[in-house]
Length: 405
Ligand code: CTP
Figure 1 (tube, protein in one colour):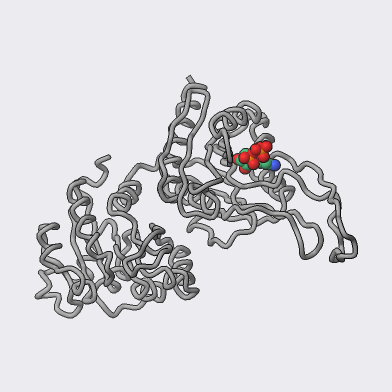
Figure 2 (cartoon, rainbow, N blue to C red; figure 1 turned 90 degrees about the vertical axis):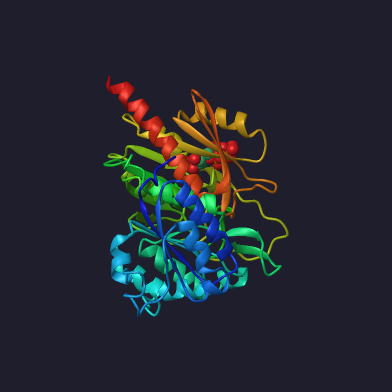
């Protein structure tokens, strides 16, 4: 991929130990042909010197909000207008908080506020800071403004603790930026995506559900929207904020999901069933809370509609993509689902062991269609969704150009 050739990328660096990786990111962006300008916060200059970034970007490094003249003829307004894309890596909890409330007390956040360029943040911080409700609320707010959050990664941290908070590797951040400059390959297409778990009520307070977080479905909705599609996301209960620009229809049970899909499928070009739909629901959902007055209970269950198979069986069915969450014989089970449900493509992923996709930021997929298997290696669900969207679009366009000719 060389989509960064000649692209004007503003790299913001904030104060955190991951700032040393920003030098590698700067170098990678230059290697991909981008024109890179760097703003460092004062805290960032405590971790890595401006001279390093100056040498790598081949440009003066910006830091001072008030001395535009001495700041190499480019004040915040010029930098804001110049940038085609802004990436802040690492993005500290402090800078994320400032951006969320529109603060403008240093050159970096002021430039972001003055710019129309798409903003990417690669957070890096201690895992407890990342998990803190204040940081999470700030991130949710920024997502609702259309900001792209890439990472953070999980693993051992510089502070010696283990958790989610490491900055993504520079190569992966660069790939996110490359994706944005690709063409609108799903322009004018309508995409319907199901995501998350369903909840099958046993009584007013209890129910049957599963461990799906909804992250993969939401990431796909975001990737399809970025590729130019109009996206409807039909989601079971999750803790996620719908991606910017995506219409989200919230449902609870499998039957409600089926009804919502059928009500929105007529103009749909591509359907992606990512939801972990409950296969069965209790025959009776009790009106009152069930009392524990018996030693054992038996719950009679009845099959739920198979939404994916229903969509694939429609006259004029959209290009239909299903997921197969498997604990064993991943490829052969997925191949059986492809045929049994009559879909165009199945994305198979492991849901047991160390690489389980459930409730993880990461996943890997085998894309299976009638022509064979394409393996997408393990990476963040956001990046994986972007790669998968391209694969779906390619197959969609191939299928429909063949049908038309
Ligand atoms: N799916 C669906 N409606 C259902 C069950 C599943 O739309 N009632 C979709 C899921 O969204 C996914 C695909 O079917 O895209 C595969 O789901 P999965 O649970 O892996 O497989 P099942 O078909 O349920 O088969 P099994 O549980 O026997 O593995």
